[in-house]
Length: 250
Image (cartoon, rainbow, N blue to C red):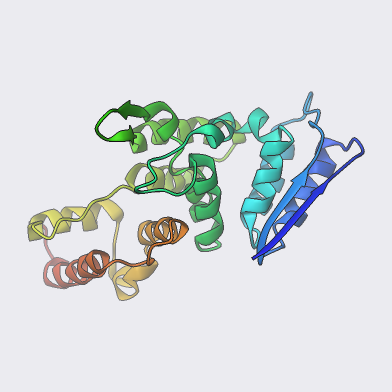
């Protein structure tokens, strides 16, 4: 692991800061802590953020660039729903990082596909609103995917991300908490197939389904094996039910 810490001493512009963030994504071997004075975002149009942000997200290690945007105040301006997650701790039984850090790690670990990178970055932002603390369970975030769907819609509208890309990102955020039970009937499995739009080409390489790729990155970010035995069983079950029933509905 490479860890580099540096600080920009002089004032830099918004556009320079976005360029720095993009450059930071090229360091794929470790974490960079790159500090800057707060950046003036007054009068900056949204398109001047969205286009470079897409490039940052698609970088080799977007976590470095996104941390920099948070630290210099740009993220708070354009995606406050993510920035505010920095101070939200999670139950250490399930997560080693706060919500923000977990999200940027998943973004970096998932396949370099724009919808997956955005979904990885935003998948848990609903936890900010869903957070509840109980004496027995500690921090809980029940139904955070529902809150996350709404927040993601708002972010997409703000950033001018529309159409199919928006729908794919929102779908992944809303459904990333899918929970397969081995007791599922074939009818329930078929409903999942219909919901996710799994087709003949997708079934051939089912491990590449975006929802499953997002789950793998999520698990890897927490130090778990990317694919659990239960997930492998689920994928095998999907193939079996699809092959038996692709010609008809239950």
